[in-house]
Amino acid sequence: MKKRTRLYTALETVPAKQIQLIERRLFLRHSLSLGALALLTGCNVTDVDAVHKTLGAMSKWNDRVQGWLFNPNKLAPVYPESAITRPFPFNAYYDEDEVPKVNAAHYRLMLGGLIRDRKPWALPRLYALPQVSQITRHVCVEGWSAIGKWSGVPFRYFLEHVGADLSAKYVGFRCLDDYYTSIDMATALHPQTQLTFKYADEILPPKYGFPMKLRIPTKLGFKNPKYIAEIFVTNMYPGGYWEDMGYNWYSGL
Ligand SMILES: Nc1nc2c(c(=O)[nH]1)N[C@H]1C(S)=C(S)[C@@H](COP(=O)(O)O)O[C@H]1N2
Ligand SMILES: [Mo]
Image 1: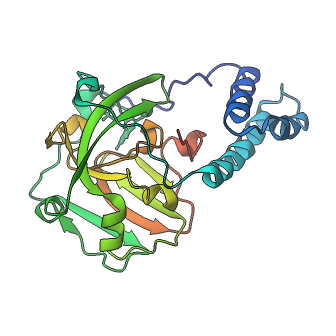
Image 2 (image 1 turned 180 degrees about the vertical axis):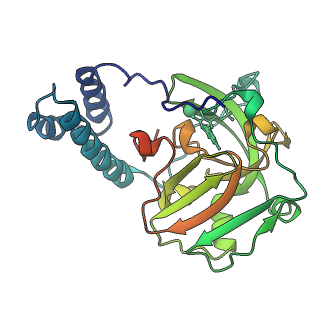
């Protein structure tokens, strides 16, 4: 399997360009340009290690600011059926012919960490939960976006149902491929964050994450785990597949 070790982004150029882009984003989104620049003046931009350390620190700071600015009631835009992108793109860190093939009868969703009822869930029990649909835009950091229709249970409902500690900091996801990611609790509880079982009114096909994905229209695509094997609640930073390679952890839209 040819695993990818990086997402291809606009930040893949020279460090100076990265700084410019990140600075621009901070400026546009959060008006933090002076603070960000001040952080950078401490290091020589030809010293790659120092630049990376500084960018890492900026990214952590950026996570915190995005968290503070996140409005838990602000909804992502929704679209009519006519706006749906066909065909909807597939993406993963491997090719489409290598997607996990999951046996529905044997599948169990595992729960861990700060959750009262950690009994594993078989699919029929998950499918019996109350479901809603959304038509929203998925934005990938690689420079494409697409509108799709996803159905499933509001994630907040699920977390309350299993007695998750909603005052914990993080919800982490382990997937059936080697993927993993994690999100902040405020985003987990957002009304449009959905534990998704269907794409376009049909059970999720393998390429879109069967048996289950988390749909988060307020975050970049790589924060939307497919093929979820385990959900855990924790106060210890769980990181993620791309996040641990330096992609901004919060990655809000
Ligand atoms: N388990 C798993 N989830 C994943 C990925 C992955 O490689 N493995 N890729 C992420 C990325 S980068 C994107 S853009 C979306 C793509 O979802 P789609 O195939 O439904 O378009 O899945 C995200 N979730
Ligand atoms: Mo992505």
